[in-house]
Length: 208
Length: 328
Image 1 (cartoon, each protein chain N blue to C red):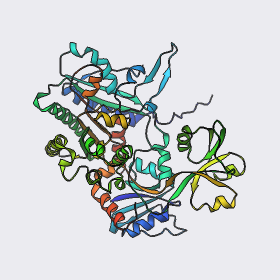
Image 2 (image 1 turned 180 degrees about the horizontal axis):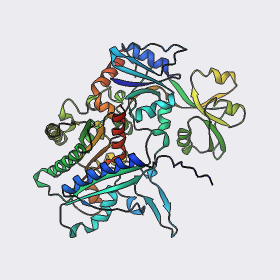
Image 3 (image 1 turned 135 degrees about the horizontal axis):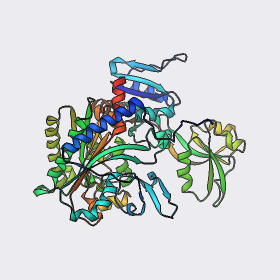
């Protein structure tokens, strides 16, 4: 049986739709459903519902064999996980956001607010400007709005929130997509089952 | 005075039953190694950084714990037994009776990001066989002997299901050099088993990430193809000899073990393996519990011609796998 970790956040819908399209009968958890585990006996799956940021950790430790997690989280945690597929839907962008019209000038020292401090440090290394990284746990857009930081590094989906708050997407860093991640030991032990699942995703055109 | 019992990220203290079980396992494995003719070496936990700067290594520079001693020397905490032993033994090798069978045990320390679920201090036990007679098969006999020692040791660790994956360094060099696209992307995609990277016109690499080897071994080139054939036969022999251990060949697992100088330069990799490589997994644990391979190149870099193969086991990971199995 494959033990699958699904994120409770914005990627849950994408994951559920992809599994259903691949013929795996996963139901939406009811809003008042407090179950943390669900078994899908016909498809040989046991599903754990976890916070997005916890998915890589559970998979890394082998508590779950595989999971769905955003590439933004994956890049941040630097785990040694296999990433055999990226989902076609649910994509967004990781972008620099600010109130002004331009990115910082060469030599400028700024404050940068983000939920992704490791990614931010890597990005700032290659820039002609410097930044003090401020790690926030949520509502990152508020930081440039309230002058906590000159820039924010955060996920942009439609850009509507930014427009409503007079913020600008100054530079797109990369595309972000939900990914299927698998731990190395589980892949070796469950290779046939995991490859079978991947083929079903591909046939249903759920992954790129 | 109130004293906190907390420890830095990535290190652990073992008490009572945990400590006893850890030492029992260690004792059992050490006895096995000594029964098989391995002599113990005790290596320092601190060494100069300088000698390792230009040596092949499986440890990234940013994983080292470095510091400046009071007399101004730049030092590093031990991050890998194999490189330390090689640099200490290489100048003496000509004066010693070969082959040498040595074993070590102790901690290695590597800085790892705390979110990734990894420890920073690992307790390792391992063995090295240096200067084994190569014979006419380019030293593959010696490699096989070391792998057999490793499986024998692994079989003595307990009752959990075990899987050993085999490959050889440089197996995918030809396929990677022939890839029509960004080389760094292809190399990373093999290791992460990203299928989409190889869907358009890189069928052999796609088969490697899916099932561990190409459907037609000729895709690897004549020499590597023949080597894969011998390795597959060896996996079958070992699976029969060690029925509790599943043995399989998977070249993608070692996709970063490149040999071609062009690949090492373009990918900025400096691994030391240049022959057989292997990793062991216990249950569904994500991190291998051990591994090893052949690394003549490391000695060549130190100016000495000698065959060298070795293996190590992480007692922490073995113990973690055993504990999880007991709880299940």
